Length: 210
Picture 1 (cartoon, rainbow, N blue to C red):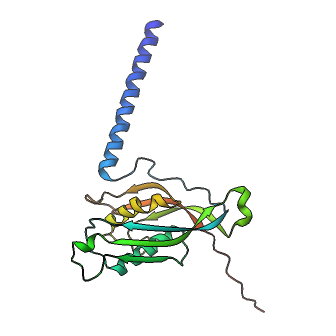
Picture 2: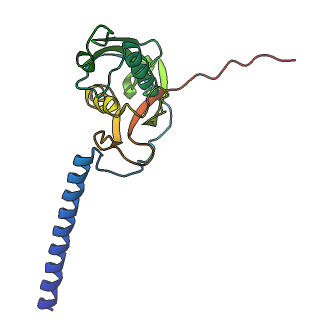
Picture 3: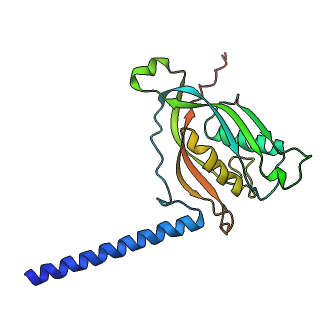
């Protein structure tokens, strides 16, 4: 019996070592390919409305070594669409600079974008009476065409948005594939999935009819 038990324990240790080595290899592969370690299809969070309030955020995003030149209008529309997708109020302020036409292509590949916007944030139970918006938690997938102004050439821009903007606001990155130097051959070529609060839109007013 003792010999059998020792043999079983030895096999168990070997199995654990193999599992640890496999996990390390997976983590290294994800780091090299620009993807996250986690489930491929994240579970959607609870969509029950919660009491929230609009919270202001002022963020400066410094972009570096972009692979192509963006005009100031390009950056305005792309950041505008991304913020709307993340649940921001439409009355945001976006100022892009170091992207003027007078700059050389090299100078224009390190623009800056100043952002001032409101996002819903959950209130604790003791402060729910101060709520000025109801919101639901939802999954947001950012990829070419979603939102509309993000296209197939925006992988590096989205990667820098993930690094320079998302850690400063109340959203959670759930999964990503942003290996911009070696883009994925399938569709979409890149993607970023986050969990964010979305304001609940009030029901449309009904028109009285006879």
